[in-house]
Length: 311
Image 1 (tube, rainbow, N blue to C red):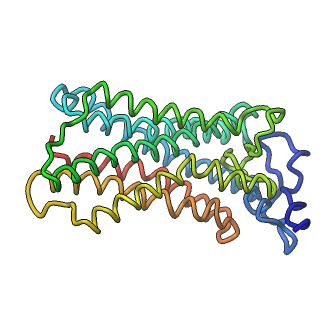
Image 2 (image 1 turned 45 degrees about the vertical axis):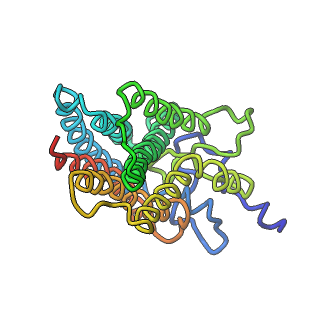
Image 3 (image 1 turned 180 degrees about the vertical axis):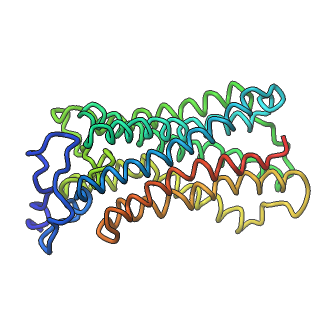
């Protein structure tokens, strides 16, 4: 047990924030999971990764921005409360991709991380993007579940008002904003989680020793995406177990449409989180870069599905 508690991220306190803590080529049989989380490839590969992720982020932010503008500029579309939910859902997708593009191309121009401030800033907006998306999923899924349960009990379902949508969505996004602050607070606050450049190319909150792993998986991850993933699983199972989905009618069409958007996020986030954070030694730096790009592409997939909504 003492050996577990003594393992830590090699060189974590000796390297300026934003610079690679160690290289992937330096890993060996004595390397810890924390080393695998942080080990970076060569500088040339890092630049290629930033170009790939940055280009993807530009495409995603433009795509999401166009769809967001189309809904926001349509008085008829804005009048429907569930379309307001979709607008709030696109906010974290757009901001994460847009800001990530800026961070990546600044790093490309410098050949390394632009500054410690930018490293901290990226850590915040990535957490905001993941957390905001996850908790907005919970907000929307709760309404769909309530609508289907009421229909089964022959109880009239009333759509939430625009004010209720704004309050619920605002709370979800404020919570994501708060979570993003955790890893950028000064070390004097003694919060056992820190921002480091994961594989050298993306500054995110990561574990660095066993106590921080406990905090990460028992507190931080559940607050970020764990609880939303469990709730999503519960709702899907409950709808299937109780056969809540109507066999025909407009309610079925609407519920299936919204559930597809939710499942799209579920399928995009889960594998990326698993390979990037839970089993970091399973894939190399380019594998993790692929899953970073995969996470960004979720914005295109979910917002693309929104185009299929008749109203």
